[in-house]
Length: 225
Image 1: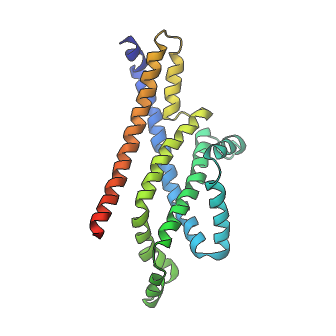
Image 2 (image 1 turned 180 degrees about the vertical axis):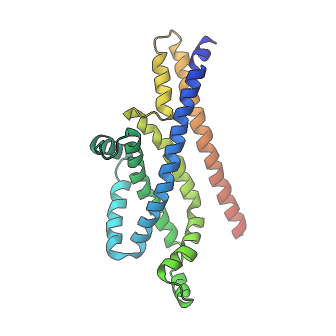
Image 3 (image 1 turned 180 degrees about the horizontal axis):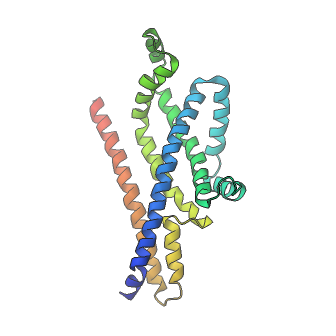
C-alpha cells in the first residue's frame, strides 16, 4: 500500500496529468496542421506536374525514413534562436513526418474518385479550385476518415519518442516519477504501477479511437448495402 500511495501522491498525479495534456495537445496540434499541409501536398502530387514532383520527393523522403531520425535532426540541428522550445522542435519533427503520411492518405482518397467528376463540374461552370473544394475533397475526406483516425492513434503513440529528448510528455513524466522512487525497496512494485498506469492510459485513448474507426467502417458498409 505504501508503494501505491508514494507513486500516486497528489503531486505525482498532477505531474502525470500535465504530461498527458502535453501529449494530447501535441497530437491534436500536429494532426491538425499535418492534415492541412498533407492535403495540399497530396493535391499537388496528384494534379500539378512540376510542383507535384517536388511534393512527391518530400513525401517519399519522410515516409521512407525513421521518425526518430527527424526528431534528432529537428531537436539538435534546428537553431534554438529559430525555434526556442525543445517541445516545439519535437513537434516540428512529428509535423514533417505526419504530413508526408497524411499526404499519401489524401492522395489515395483522391485516386478513388473518378476523373469524370472534374469534367462534369467543368460543364457546370466550376473551375479547378471550386471543383476540389466543393465536390472532390468532401468525397475524399469521407473515404479517408478511417485512415486519418488510425494515423491520429499512431501520432499519439509516437509522441512517446520525445521522452528520449527530455520533453515532458506523458511517458517522460512517468519515467521521472519512477526515477524519484528508484532507491525505494519497493521499486519493482512502483515500476509496475507507473508503467502499468502509462500502458492503461495509452490503451484507453488509442482503443477508444480504434472503436471509432471500426464503427465508422461498419456504418459505411451498412449504408452501401
